[in-house]
Image (cartoon, rainbow over all chains, first blue to last red; front, top):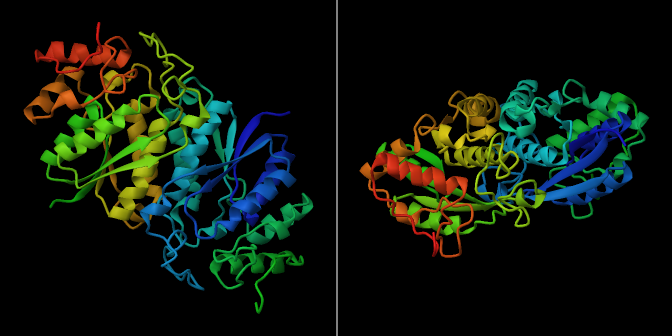
Length: 226
Length: 226
């Protein structure tokens, strides 16, 4: 077994591809998901399937109380997810979400003695999410070096975001090469209980375009009438 | 009511003083404590008393799953807290604790529209804790500016650590001027269920020395025989 890595796994297309890439690099993978009060909780079931299928050594779901704070359409059922996030930072932005996710990954990585934390942020997702940008990842790397015993003792964990400059189509192409079963992933913000996608939200549209541009059949399961 | 601030409140001497200082500066204070699986959970009761006594507008206790990860004498009852932490990073270090605390404070601050987050780290506490140093606080400030909508839109929350360069005696002197009731605070890592201190762990010794050097009576309630 290779060196250990903590891999953030949402159950969506990007993080499933990420896990396949990290496994292919020979890492011993510890997959980490969060129950943060998201309305689309079905993604956690998808994450469990993906972790199992792609050979994670462990899959942990941490419960964290950021949904109760409100402020996002992803955690507040009363705030509808729009079809189009529009310009600027969309209403699906969850305050400080990736900072909270990475900080908990950092805690687990230190206890595991992991070499790296992998996060599946990418430039396409920066349809306005500040915490999906390369400069955010670099700032967290700088913090990790100062924040932990591991860092102070000279071997800080690295924060890696290998998808950050890829398009959706490139991500899908890479995942297909690694035999990722995209039918079991859920990207939709309005997925139903069976994990079927709405086909209309930002997340669905980016995903559909990705399959089109990659010239691959879209295996996504859609809700009736989509 | 002044601008809003999130104030990290453990229930110990430092954070109680911090809350008094922030209130005296005119902030509308939102006190934040964490149930992170600490063995010395009595500090949460102390935090509630302190928040009430010092006029916080709200006191929230977030439950977070870092204790279950292990790796620290503060969260694992099987790992005893030593009388003397010794050189290097002590066994009471909790992996990435202040990073996790600040990231959740950042989420709350953004939802509240708070101007500042206050954390009571200080140099004396850096008896080896990497995440109590000024450079850690500065790195988190840099991250916060990039991580959030608030930051991207030009008014990042500031991360303030006004105790960072004070000695324990200076902290106590300042708190006494602001009428902080130190009898209701709990610093001890091995406090009993009534909040009485062991008098021998690092946290107790730093506190005792602080009252001595400040030439003030120590109101700490100690366990029988101490």
